[in-house]
Length: 305
Image (cartoon, rainbow, N blue to C red; front, side, top):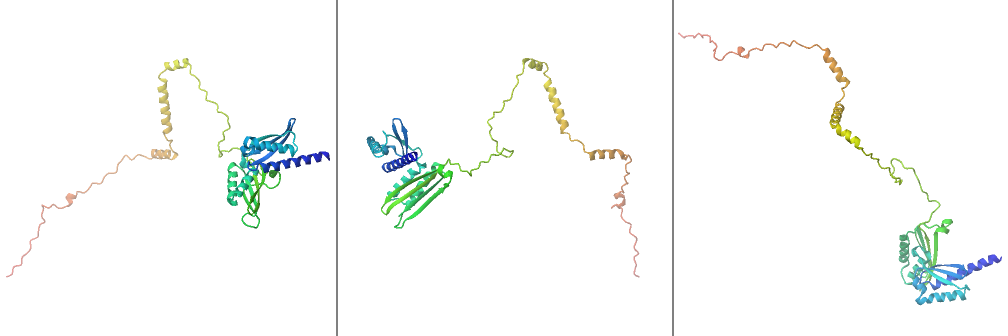
Protein backbone atom coordinates (compact mmCIF):
# COMPACT_ATOMS: atom_id res chain seq x y z
CA UNK A 1 0.00 0.00 0.00
CA UNK A 2 2.72 2.58 0.78
CA UNK A 3 4.12 2.16 -2.74
CA UNK A 4 0.69 2.66 -4.35
CA UNK A 5 -0.02 5.67 -2.14
CA UNK A 6 3.31 7.24 -3.00
CA UNK A 7 2.70 6.69 -6.72
CA UNK A 8 -0.77 8.30 -6.54
CA UNK A 9 0.55 11.28 -4.61
CA UNK A 10 3.25 11.88 -7.23
CA UNK A 11 0.67 11.70 -10.03
CA UNK A 12 -1.62 14.10 -8.16
CA UNK A 13 1.26 16.50 -7.55
CA UNK A 14 2.30 16.39 -11.23
CA UNK A 15 -1.26 17.06 -12.49
CA UNK A 16 -1.66 19.96 -10.06
CA UNK A 17 1.62 21.52 -11.27
CA UNK A 18 0.52 21.04 -14.89
CA UNK A 19 -2.79 22.86 -14.28
CA UNK A 20 -1.04 25.72 -12.49
CA UNK A 21 1.52 26.22 -15.26
CA UNK A 22 -1.18 26.01 -17.96
CA UNK A 23 -3.04 28.88 -16.26
CA UNK A 24 0.08 30.99 -15.69
CA UNK A 25 1.59 30.48 -19.15
CA UNK A 26 -1.60 30.57 -21.18
CA UNK A 27 -0.47 33.53 -23.27
CA UNK A 28 2.94 31.92 -23.86
CA UNK A 29 1.29 28.90 -25.56
CA UNK A 30 2.06 26.36 -22.86
CA UNK A 31 2.76 22.89 -24.32
CA UNK A 32 3.60 20.71 -21.29
CA UNK A 33 5.97 20.11 -18.40
CA UNK A 34 8.50 17.43 -17.50
CA UNK A 35 9.71 16.76 -13.95
CA UNK A 36 13.05 15.08 -13.20
CA UNK A 37 14.57 14.20 -9.86
CA UNK A 38 18.31 14.98 -9.55
CA UNK A 39 20.76 14.97 -6.60
CA UNK A 40 20.85 18.78 -6.68
CA UNK A 41 17.07 19.15 -6.68
CA UNK A 42 13.95 18.90 -8.87
CA UNK A 43 14.44 19.89 -12.49
CA UNK A 44 11.38 21.39 -14.28
CA UNK A 45 11.42 21.52 -18.11
CA UNK A 46 8.77 23.77 -19.65
CA UNK A 47 7.71 23.43 -23.31
CA UNK A 48 6.22 26.64 -24.68
CA UNK A 49 5.59 28.24 -28.04
CA UNK A 50 6.74 31.75 -27.01
CA UNK A 51 9.83 31.71 -24.86
CA UNK A 52 9.95 35.49 -24.31
CA UNK A 53 6.48 35.67 -22.76
CA UNK A 54 7.21 32.65 -20.55
CA UNK A 55 10.38 34.19 -19.08
CA UNK A 56 8.97 37.71 -18.74
CA UNK A 57 10.83 40.97 -18.25
CA UNK A 58 14.11 40.31 -16.38
CA UNK A 59 12.86 36.80 -15.55
CA UNK A 60 9.96 37.90 -13.37
CA UNK A 61 7.65 35.09 -14.45
CA UNK A 62 10.32 32.44 -13.83
CA UNK A 63 11.06 33.76 -10.32
CA UNK A 64 7.36 33.85 -9.41
CA UNK A 65 6.78 30.31 -10.72
CA UNK A 66 9.89 29.00 -8.91
CA UNK A 67 8.68 30.35 -5.55
CA UNK A 68 5.19 28.91 -6.11
CA UNK A 69 6.59 25.45 -6.89
CA UNK A 70 8.79 25.52 -3.78
CA UNK A 71 6.13 26.75 -1.34
CA UNK A 72 2.80 25.40 -2.68
CA UNK A 73 3.89 22.11 -4.29
CA UNK A 74 6.88 21.40 -2.03
CA UNK A 75 9.51 20.79 -4.69
CA UNK A 76 13.11 20.52 -3.50
CA UNK A 77 15.20 23.36 -4.96
CA UNK A 78 13.29 23.62 -8.30
CA UNK A 79 15.38 24.56 -11.34
CA UNK A 80 13.27 25.72 -14.30
CA UNK A 81 14.40 25.28 -17.89
CA UNK A 82 12.35 26.79 -20.74
CA UNK A 83 12.48 25.15 -24.22
CA UNK A 84 10.73 26.17 -27.42
CA UNK A 85 8.51 23.68 -29.27
CA UNK A 86 9.99 22.87 -32.70
CA UNK A 87 6.65 22.28 -34.49
CA UNK A 88 3.88 24.04 -32.54
CA UNK A 89 1.37 23.15 -35.31
CA UNK A 90 1.71 19.47 -34.34
CA UNK A 91 1.14 20.14 -30.63
CA UNK A 92 -2.59 19.75 -29.90
CA UNK A 93 -2.43 21.73 -26.67
CA UNK A 94 -0.85 24.79 -28.29
CA UNK A 95 -3.31 24.73 -31.20
CA UNK A 96 -6.23 24.46 -28.76
CA UNK A 97 -4.97 27.59 -26.95
CA UNK A 98 -4.66 29.43 -30.27
CA UNK A 99 -8.21 28.53 -31.26
CA UNK A 100 -9.55 29.57 -27.85
CA UNK A 101 -7.76 32.93 -27.99
CA UNK A 102 -9.17 33.60 -31.48
CA UNK A 103 -12.69 32.89 -30.18
CA UNK A 104 -12.15 35.28 -27.25
CA UNK A 105 -11.15 38.01 -29.69
CA UNK A 106 -14.57 37.67 -31.38
CA UNK A 107 -13.62 35.78 -34.53
CA UNK A 108 -16.22 33.44 -36.08
CA UNK A 109 -15.80 29.87 -34.88
CA UNK A 110 -16.01 28.25 -38.37
CA UNK A 111 -13.43 30.56 -39.85
CA UNK A 112 -11.10 30.01 -36.89
CA UNK A 113 -11.48 26.21 -37.01
CA UNK A 114 -10.83 25.95 -40.76
CA UNK A 115 -7.77 28.19 -40.44
CA UNK A 116 -6.32 25.91 -37.72
CA UNK A 117 -7.02 22.82 -39.86
CA UNK A 118 -5.20 24.27 -42.86
CA UNK A 119 -2.15 25.17 -40.79
CA UNK A 120 -1.93 21.72 -39.21
CA UNK A 121 -2.34 19.81 -42.48
CA UNK A 122 0.28 21.99 -44.19
CA UNK A 123 2.90 20.76 -41.71
CA UNK A 124 2.28 17.10 -42.64
CA UNK A 125 -0.26 15.77 -40.13
CA UNK A 126 -2.26 12.71 -41.16
CA UNK A 127 -5.54 13.90 -39.62
CA UNK A 128 -7.19 16.40 -37.28
CA UNK A 129 -10.45 16.66 -35.37
CA UNK A 130 -11.73 19.82 -33.64
CA UNK A 131 -14.74 20.01 -31.30
CA UNK A 132 -16.19 23.32 -30.10
CA UNK A 133 -18.93 23.03 -27.47
CA UNK A 134 -21.04 25.61 -25.63
CA UNK A 135 -23.21 28.60 -26.47
CA UNK A 136 -21.44 29.30 -29.75
CA UNK A 137 -23.94 31.51 -31.60
CA UNK A 138 -27.07 31.49 -29.44
CA UNK A 139 -28.26 30.84 -25.90
CA UNK A 140 -28.70 27.16 -26.70
CA UNK A 141 -25.55 25.06 -26.28
CA UNK A 142 -24.43 22.68 -29.00
CA UNK A 143 -21.33 20.91 -30.30
CA UNK A 144 -19.69 21.69 -33.65
CA UNK A 145 -17.20 19.15 -35.03
CA UNK A 146 -14.64 19.72 -37.80
CA UNK A 147 -12.65 16.84 -39.29
CA UNK A 148 -9.95 16.44 -41.92
CA UNK A 149 -7.92 13.35 -42.80
CA UNK A 150 -7.87 10.25 -40.57
CA UNK A 151 -7.72 10.19 -36.76
CA UNK A 152 -7.60 6.90 -34.84
CA UNK A 153 -10.12 6.75 -31.97
CA UNK A 154 -9.22 3.49 -30.20
CA UNK A 155 -6.47 0.93 -29.82
CA UNK A 156 -2.72 1.24 -29.84
CA UNK A 157 -2.54 3.81 -32.74
CA UNK A 158 -4.79 6.20 -30.79
CA UNK A 159 -2.54 5.99 -27.72
CA UNK A 160 0.78 6.26 -29.55
CA UNK A 161 0.17 8.62 -32.47
CA UNK A 162 -2.77 10.86 -31.46
CA UNK A 163 -2.13 14.02 -29.43
CA UNK A 164 -5.03 15.48 -27.43
CA UNK A 165 -5.29 19.09 -26.31
CA UNK A 166 -8.02 21.00 -24.45
CA UNK A 167 -8.62 24.67 -23.74
CA UNK A 168 -11.42 27.04 -22.70
CA UNK A 169 -12.51 30.39 -24.07
CA UNK A 170 -14.55 32.90 -22.03
CA UNK A 171 -16.96 34.98 -24.15
CA UNK A 172 -20.10 37.02 -23.41
CA UNK A 173 -22.50 34.09 -23.71
CA UNK A 174 -20.46 31.90 -21.38
CA UNK A 175 -17.59 29.42 -21.39
CA UNK A 176 -16.66 27.65 -24.66
CA UNK A 177 -14.78 24.35 -24.60
CA UNK A 178 -12.23 23.50 -27.30
CA UNK A 179 -10.86 20.02 -27.95
CA UNK A 180 -8.22 19.25 -30.61
CA UNK A 181 -6.96 15.82 -31.73
CA UNK A 182 -3.97 15.62 -34.07
CA UNK A 183 -2.64 12.44 -35.66
CA UNK A 184 1.03 12.71 -36.58
CA UNK A 185 2.23 12.16 -40.11
CA UNK A 186 4.74 9.44 -39.11
CA UNK A 187 1.96 7.22 -37.74
CA UNK A 188 2.19 3.55 -38.84
CA UNK A 189 -1.20 1.86 -38.85
CA UNK A 190 -1.65 -1.92 -38.61
CA UNK A 191 -3.46 -2.06 -41.96
CA UNK A 192 -0.68 -0.30 -43.90
CA UNK A 193 0.62 -2.63 -46.64
CA UNK A 194 3.77 -2.29 -48.70
CA UNK A 195 4.09 -4.42 -51.86
CA UNK A 196 7.58 -5.43 -52.89
CA UNK A 197 7.62 -7.09 -56.33
CA UNK A 198 10.54 -8.38 -58.35
CA UNK A 199 11.39 -6.24 -61.39
CA UNK A 200 10.15 -7.52 -64.74
CA UNK A 201 10.91 -6.66 -68.35
CA UNK A 202 8.04 -4.16 -68.43
CA UNK A 203 8.83 -2.54 -65.07
CA UNK A 204 11.04 0.45 -64.55
CA UNK A 205 14.80 0.02 -64.52
CA UNK A 206 15.93 0.24 -60.92
CA UNK A 207 19.36 1.58 -60.11
CA UNK A 208 21.04 -1.19 -58.11
CA UNK A 209 24.09 0.92 -57.32
CA UNK A 210 26.49 -1.57 -58.90
CA UNK A 211 28.92 0.14 -61.22
CA UNK A 212 29.49 -1.44 -64.60
CA UNK A 213 32.95 -2.74 -65.33
CA UNK A 214 34.83 -0.50 -67.78
CA UNK A 215 35.93 -1.93 -71.12
CA UNK A 216 39.52 -3.11 -71.19
CA UNK A 217 41.45 -1.67 -74.14
CA UNK A 218 44.61 -3.54 -74.97
CA UNK A 219 47.62 -1.52 -76.06
CA UNK A 220 49.16 -2.43 -79.41
CA UNK A 221 52.84 -3.24 -79.15
CA UNK A 222 55.48 -1.75 -81.44
CA UNK A 223 56.24 -5.15 -83.02
CA UNK A 224 52.68 -5.48 -84.32
CA UNK A 225 52.87 -1.97 -85.77
CA UNK A 226 56.12 -2.84 -87.60
CA UNK A 227 54.54 -5.99 -89.09
CA UNK A 228 51.63 -3.97 -90.38
CA UNK A 229 53.98 -1.46 -91.94
CA UNK A 230 55.84 -4.27 -93.82
CA UNK A 231 52.59 -5.33 -95.56
CA UNK A 232 50.80 -2.11 -96.54
CA UNK A 233 48.64 -3.85 -99.20
CA UNK A 234 46.80 -6.01 -96.65
CA UNK A 235 44.15 -3.38 -96.06
CA UNK A 236 43.35 -3.12 -99.78
CA UNK A 237 43.04 -6.90 -100.16
CA UNK A 238 40.74 -7.07 -97.14
CA UNK A 239 38.55 -4.36 -98.62
CA UNK A 240 38.28 -6.26 -101.92
CA UNK A 241 37.32 -9.46 -100.11
CA UNK A 242 34.63 -7.69 -98.11
CA UNK A 243 33.21 -6.08 -101.26
CA UNK A 244 33.01 -9.46 -103.03
CA UNK A 245 31.25 -11.04 -100.08
CA UNK A 246 28.77 -8.17 -99.92
CA UNK A 247 28.00 -8.57 -103.67
CA UNK A 248 27.38 -12.29 -103.22
CA UNK A 249 24.99 -11.58 -100.39
CA UNK A 250 23.13 -9.03 -102.48
CA UNK A 251 22.50 -11.59 -105.26
CA UNK A 252 19.14 -13.24 -104.74
CA UNK A 253 19.08 -17.05 -104.89
CA UNK A 254 17.16 -18.50 -107.83
CA UNK A 255 13.74 -19.85 -107.17
CA UNK A 256 12.75 -23.44 -108.02
CA UNK A 257 10.20 -22.23 -110.58
CA UNK A 258 12.85 -20.31 -112.50
CA UNK A 259 15.02 -23.44 -112.72
CA UNK A 260 12.08 -25.45 -114.10
CA UNK A 261 11.40 -22.83 -116.76
CA UNK A 262 15.04 -23.02 -117.90
CA UNK A 263 14.77 -26.83 -118.21
CA UNK A 264 11.59 -26.54 -120.36
CA UNK A 265 13.25 -24.05 -122.69
CA UNK A 266 16.22 -26.40 -123.25
CA UNK A 267 13.95 -29.42 -124.06
CA UNK A 268 11.91 -27.59 -126.77
CA UNK A 269 13.41 -27.78 -130.40
CA UNK A 270 14.47 -24.57 -131.98
CA UNK A 271 12.38 -23.39 -134.92
CA UNK A 272 14.96 -22.81 -137.68
CA UNK A 273 12.51 -22.57 -140.54
CA UNK A 274 10.75 -19.39 -140.49
CA UNK A 275 7.25 -19.19 -141.72
CA UNK A 276 7.20 -18.08 -145.32
CA UNK A 277 5.61 -14.83 -145.73
CA UNK A 278 2.72 -14.78 -148.18
CA UNK A 279 3.28 -12.55 -151.15
CA UNK A 280 1.35 -9.44 -150.86
CA UNK A 281 -0.90 -8.54 -153.75
CA UNK A 282 -0.04 -5.44 -155.58
CA UNK A 283 -2.75 -3.02 -154.95
CA UNK A 284 -1.52 -0.95 -157.79
CA UNK A 285 -1.97 -3.79 -160.34
CA UNK A 286 -5.47 -4.52 -159.20
CA UNK A 287 -6.57 -0.97 -159.41
CA UNK A 288 -7.21 0.37 -162.99
CA UNK A 289 -5.08 3.19 -164.03
CA UNK A 290 -6.67 6.51 -164.41
CA UNK A 291 -4.95 7.04 -167.79
CA UNK A 292 -6.59 4.05 -169.49
CA UNK A 293 -10.07 5.04 -170.36
CA UNK A 294 -12.80 2.56 -170.53
CA UNK A 295 -13.84 1.91 -174.11
CA UNK A 296 -17.33 3.10 -174.71
CA UNK A 297 -19.58 1.01 -176.91
CA UNK A 298 -20.93 2.89 -180.02
CA UNK A 299 -24.46 3.79 -179.52
CA UNK A 300 -26.74 3.33 -182.57
CA UNK A 301 -28.45 6.48 -183.25
CA UNK A 302 -31.91 6.05 -184.55
CA UNK A 303 -32.52 8.40 -187.28
CA UNK A 304 -35.92 9.57 -187.91
CA UNK A 305 -36.83 9.43 -191.40
